[in-house]
Length: 330
Image (cartoon, rainbow, N blue to C red; front, side, top):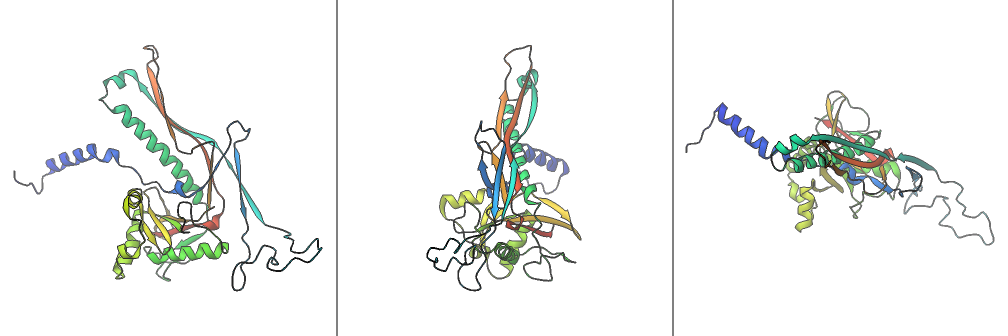
C-alpha cells in the first residue's frame, strides 16, 4: 500500500479516528490541590467552618541562627523573676474556611441507556469524576490567585522583578530561583516547603508554555535539563513523571498542569504559581476528592436515572506571601 502524503478525505478520517480513540480519554494534569494545607472537620460536630491560624515568623538575628519571639530567649532566666523572657505578643492572622457542597448531575433516560453502546455508563462516570477533580483543583487555583505576591519574568532583570514591567518575556529557570528567594525573604526563616517534599522544596506549578521556556533556557545555557534537575529513580520516579512532575530545579519541585489561567498585563500572560506550606488552606469533612454517585430507579414508570459527582469542601488563601504568582508571556 502506498503512503498518501496529502489527501483531505483521508486526513479527516484519521482525525476522526484519533479523536474517537484517544482524545476522549485525555485528562488534565491537576496539581494545585496537592499543595494546599488540608484540615478535616468532625461529622456531627455542629460546625462547617475550620479556622486556620497563621503565626508571625520569629525575627531573624543580624547574624547566626534565629532569635526567639521575645528577642531574649538566648539569655538565661533571672532567678525568681515573674517577667523575664516573657513573650508579650505573637501576631496571629486567622482565616475561616467554610465547607460547602459542590457537585453536578446528569439525568439519563432508561431508553437512552438501553440503546447506548456498552461502556457508556462507565465513560459517563469517568467524565463526572474528572469534572469533580477539575472543579476542586480549580477552586484551589482561584484561591491562590488572590495572592498579590507576584513575580514578572522580564528582560530587565534575570529572574524577574516584583514591580510591573513595561515589557514581559518568556519565563526562564532563574525566575524559579527568584521566587524561592521571595518566599524566604517575605516570611523570615523556617518557612517550609510543601507537603510531600521532605527536602524542603517548594512546588512550582507551571503552564505548558512556562515549562517549555524553563527547559529551553536550561538546555540552551549548555546545561542539559537531565543534568540540571534532581529526579527520583525507579518506579516512584516514573509515577511522578506520569503525574506531571518534571524534576527539581533550583530547589523548586517543578510540576506541569493544564489547569491554569491567563491575564492581560501589557499582553496575554500565563499565570503559574510557586507554593510554600501554609499558603492555601482547604477543609472538608473527610476526603476532599469528588465522589461519583449513581441513582438507579428500579421501576419502568420512573424512567429517569441520574449520575453525579459530589464533594463537601472549602478553600481559601491563608497567607499570600506563601504563594508567588508567576507572570510570563503566553
